[in-house]
Length: 195
Image (cartoon, rainbow, N blue to C red; front, top):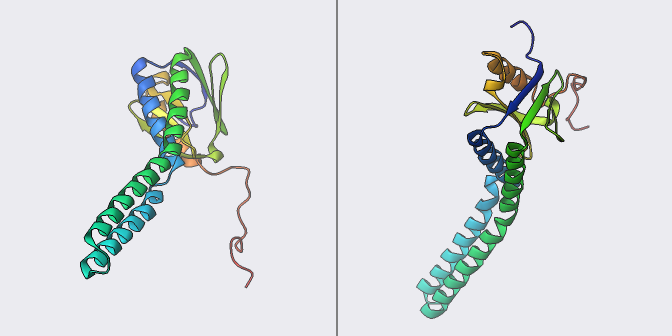
C-alpha cells in the first residue's frame, strides 16, 4: 500500500465485540476520571494518623481505650473518604459503558477515515475524532481504537478493512495522534521564562 488507508468502512459490531468495546472504553474513561496518584495522599494521611495514635498510646500519653477509639474512627473516616472518591470513577465508567452499548445496538455503522479525522456514524452521528485531539491509538481483540483523553474511542473492527490495511491504519493513527498538520512549529523560545 503506497498511501495512508483512507476510506469508508461499514461494519456491524458482534455481541462479543460490543462487550469488548464496552469494557475497554469504560475502564479507560474511569481511569481518566481519577488518576492513580489521587489515592496515594489519603493512604499516607491515614497511615500517619494511625502511627501517631499508636505512638501516643505506646508512650502512655493517651489510654489504650482512647487509642482504640481513635483507630476505629480513622478507619471509618478513611473508608468514607475512599467511597466518596470512587463516585466520579463509577459515573465515568457507567456513562462510557452506556455509550459503548448503544454503539453495539446501533446496527450498521460507518467509519469514514480521512487525513484529519475518523467519523463514526449509524442512523445518527456518534462523533468525529480528530487525530490532533486524540491521545492514543491501539489494537486489541481485533478492534482498532482511537482514544480521546476522556476515554471516548472511535472503534473499527479489523475485519471491516481489507487484509493488512488495519495495521497500516494503526501506524498512521499512531503517527498523527496528538499533533496537527496545520499547526506551525513552536518557536525555540516557547515555554521558556522571560528571565
